[in-house]
Image (tube, rainbow, N blue to C red):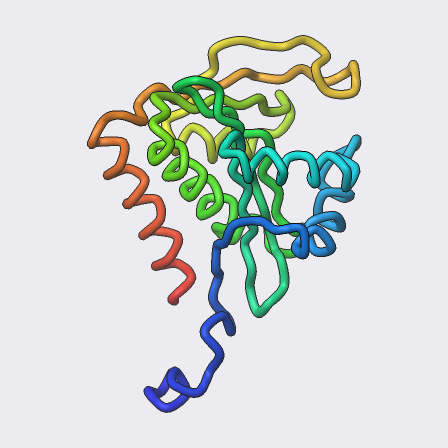
Length: 184
């Protein structure tokens, strides 16, 4: 891209930006939510979560590209742990590094909040998500039988390394790898 083209383009044109979720974003979040989960959260749950975000109990973000929301995620803070509540990416943009960027930002937020560990549940059938979480240092810690829709097991995963400087290095490397891939 020429220098002139870079100067003339809008800041978010063609690049992925991450920003805190707001009520105005829900119109872009809900279509992704509805196709990502068999039992999607209704808009009222997101509104309630955003209210808890204002109180510092949660943190939700959206990923935008060319002005459109292409992904989102959130964490709940519980004492010195953070629980990843959800991560979802628009189906046409999956496997493009968006979930990595979202999870990295959520991990940074957990660190800034003073959390020592991250936890989450993932469908036992979702091998792609499990691989993503393992790259972030999550390890299986248990199984919740029939957790999803009373039929699919959830694997409970934990990442206990948030306080270590090495973990911050890992986050930087993961983010840089995704940004480098997007720049190609």
